[in-house]
Image 1 (cartoon, rainbow, N blue to C red):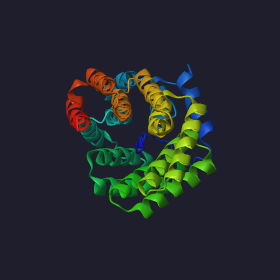
Image 2 (cartoon, rainbow, N blue to C red; image 1 turned 90 degrees about the vertical axis):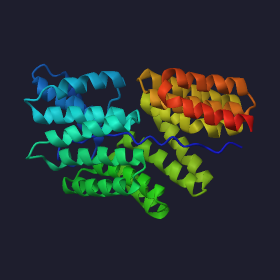
Image 3 (cartoon, helix red, strand yellow; image 1 turned 180 degrees about the vertical axis):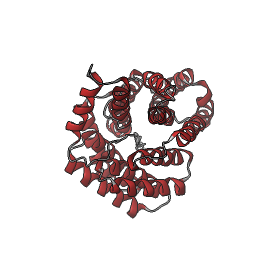
Image 4 (spheres, one colour; image 1 turned 180 degrees about the horizontal axis):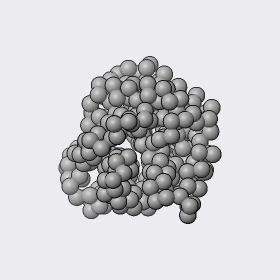
Length: 329
């Protein structure tokens, strides 16, 4: 039997307005209206677009987001917009797991942040710092940033922001072996999502619960949350959510039907590449190759890894070497 590999993608959001969020949809609709309003200034439209992108309420192509962020960074006369341009760039590099580039833009953001920064602006930087620390394996730093950010989220009564910090906190705590505290953070995030109706955040909470329960050996509950994640992602119909959902389900599906598991991995890859998310597509090819090895299809597995190498040559050579060692054994 294949051991499920949980792709828990803690996507990064922003909630810039210092206000309580009892329901995500009206606020999302309001921001979308601003981005389309001919009466709004360019700066206002850009800020609203940044809010939507960083909250993960819209998911355009990553390269388009980088281009928009570059334009915002050039607007040095508006330090707050330039600040958010740096955050947006750092966010995309974080999704692509390019740690050095992430830190460059977080450092630039720290230099640009206005002296009169509101708490939610500062929290955004903490969120990205926590995510970057998680990505480089500095769990203590990630936990400290997440706790500091949670305090700011409570200060501005921003439940959406608090969910994101609880997800980051649970990830760090889980890596530190604090499984009870990690589950407490996820349970808190779940309660907030159910109260506010933020379906996008709920997708990630389901993924977190699936991964955490799988870690402690409760495979039945883990699979149940994985299926909830999958069904909600399909209902929302977004490439980023569907990519993670299909990859999450590829190994459980392969336990029942190897070809279906491979088909799920392929779907995850397609949805990733549709938004320029090369790093997640690479994960998908790796997961596909693992299923193919399990099925005894060694040449096909090598071809899958060659595809991963082709889309990101610098990152895949060690994965191929490791795979060859396993397959020969």
